[in-house]
Image 1: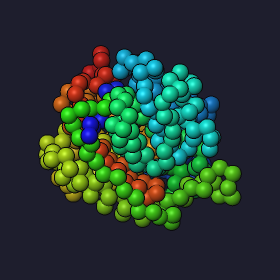
Image 2: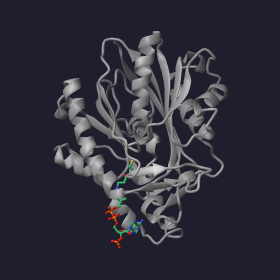
Image 3: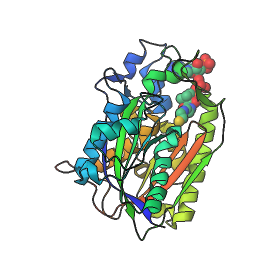
Image 4: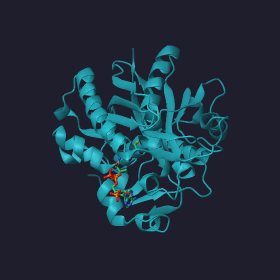
Length: 325
Ligand code: COA
């Protein structure tokens, strides 16, 4: 079975950036509390944007960087828990918006913060099944729509945004990864719009415990199935839920600090969008070059967890003309 590789990335954010200081106008909190407990300094909240507009902007950037027209896309998957409609899905709306071909599968998946990695696995298997070549895989969230701006234990954590990638079926490499679920309503749930309580509710400590345990197990499993020892991995692209979760795992597993890449300070937790936004940030920082080995791992609502091994076969576009680190 062929594997999958990412050949380009893109991202889109709402116009309105909300710094921590602004959150104290909604709830009793402070920049100091939020940044020391989570690493978050700001997030974006949508005003006029929709899940479709954010996804489309991110996708257009990824397509342009791949040098591909929309007719070359054979599959479109959007990972989201905040679609604009229960139906049509964001991916069906994208089919029309981007002019994707009609004869391709377009659907959304819900695996919360693990959604993008779940979607990459689904794309890999579907492309093997159909023999097709290019998939558009997107993570998009408008969590501000399901945030209770009176609940300080959740509203300071989350934000909106979209990340996209063009992924290619990759003969000669296998699909290596982890997908799992540990069904749990109490740790984290959201009834959704139209219900008596439409907002995200979370037992932060329970989720923290799940996250640190599953992230470590997922990275160990990626090490086993890829045959790439941790010390040979160039970067870890993990779900940006809380900098403390990432640093805890990074120190426990003796991973050098700079290899556990973060961008949570600027975006907060964008759930299914967090890993593709991070991958785009990495491409823009010039970190994703030919031969770069990445372990990507997500964890979150469901509860779910997911990991995938990615190796670049080219320098990913995005860093041109910029100073790279
Ligand atoms: N500002 C100020 N104080 C706050 C606050 C806020 N935004 N949110 C909670 N507090 C208060 C609590 O009321 C509590 O006060 P008390 O001691 O007087 O009762 C105190 O801070 C400590 O709360 P606690 O929940 O124990 O804090 P914590 O150290 O566990 O940090 C989280 C809370 C949410 C940051 C942390 O549990 C976490 O990150 N969990 C994982 C969540 C996550 O990643 N979810 C998404 C998964 S995809």
